[in-house]
Image (spheres, one colour):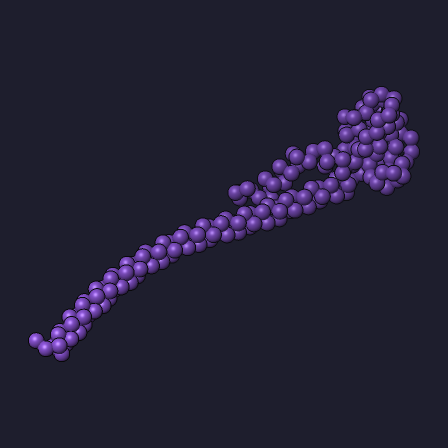
Length: 194
């Protein structure tokens, strides 16, 4: 065998070995690429699932918050309407005919007055309540009506022994507020879920 044949044979063997190494490397690279592709697909699916789960949670939270805001808005509107109903009730009490108004004030005074106290009438109600003293005396309430008081808007002020109680349509509404609100809500929103 000549040297040229030996060199050719070595070159052929080296080429064959290089081709085998390259082929094996390509197969390993293909396998690594395939594993990486499968891993990437699985990770993408996990990311999509996590994202969908997060999106659902966020959507549920937004929906719940929107429902709460709507409920709060509805409750605020209902409360405002009930408060306006109470204010209107106070105005209607103030607008009662004089005889009914004086009876209302006399009933409220009878609940808080003790013998010997004095009553001062608001300037706005002086004429309407001119019969209050006689009405209270007839009911056996021992109090004295002593003129007007500039510091009360409507109704009367019962005073004595360091005690002062305002008696008016507004104080009646304030004293019975919880019961009146209950009636207003029941009347205004009958049949609704509260």
